Image (cartoon, rainbow, N blue to C red; front, side):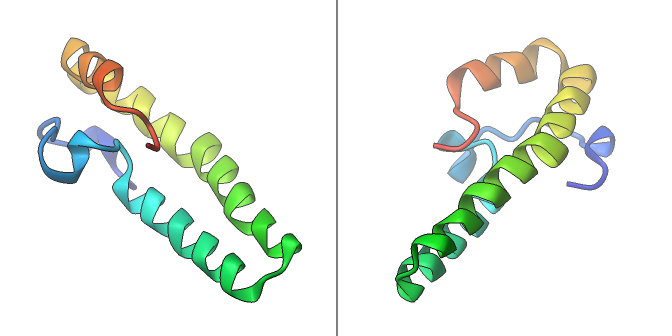
Amino acid sequence: PLRPNRAAAVVTTGVYRITRNPMYLGLVLILLGLALYLASPWALLGPLVFAAFITRFQIQPEERALTARFGAAYTAYCTQVRRWL
């Protein structure tokens, strides 16, 4: 996640067939589970804020770097697999 320009290949197998960002999705699901456990409407803001923040400041820059590195192969992958679910 810190150096997408050093990626060697576009991975499209395994969990990457379902989501382009399995690590971030897992973190959102953990936060959602914690919010449900706490049974607080305010706690539901955590996963929403995290998802919005990570999309804007991590995922979108990663996607730009991967598109620049892999071009049509990554663009085709993005049309087939959703960013989250």
